[in-house]
Image (cartoon, rainbow, N blue to C red; front, side, top):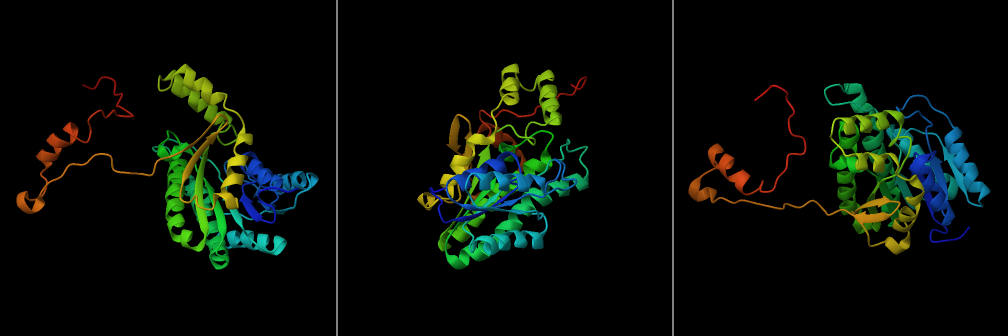
Length: 314
């Protein structure tokens, strides 16, 4: 194998299946040696098995690449350090970290337990931080490195997945902040937001949830069909392989969307409208002034994304 990542060493978490597997294979196809990390849990985070990681390692080796399995939990701070050290021990260096590992415990906010909230954030957000924290020590010292974090369009808001959405929003903010801290050391940190059919995005519970949204009139039939028939994750790998290559060394702190027919980039958060007041001359805002001014200025063309549906209430 030879390619854009020849001689590089990578860690991919959650690489035993779905998007993580595709990314690990893509990096290996481009010449990288890969630590395939996966705890082998069920979708809800229960249980563990070495089989998923072992299977991907075997697949890479059969294709002529180099790979080693790792079964640590990213949610454990010390375990994350062992993941990073495994790459250095196995391949002598660490050039690339891709954070994919995640679980799902869906529920509406009024039904969600504290445990389900914490479990999802522990794997997605804490797990991403844990691995980045240890990788950044190595990459800062060597003054080179590439980190890719996997988010979801849920970071802009979701229904029935507030824990997942909050974790992914945190990952986006973590990415942009770490990019500013690590860029001076030659380390880039970017986010991808993939749209692909995996066990997490289109499991049976999720399918039923979208069906219920359609039946409630929250989405159209066309939208439902497009969701239920999205392609698999095979299209995600090439973008990641490019972003972790030397050719993408000036790309830092960005959020990329990727799906089968489209790659796009999100805008950075900006203020879009403002109103001003000379507080030294007129004093602080009054509630009445705000109530009168805001709808006429800041909220022109605003549409409530979730209007109340309270039967019998006038």
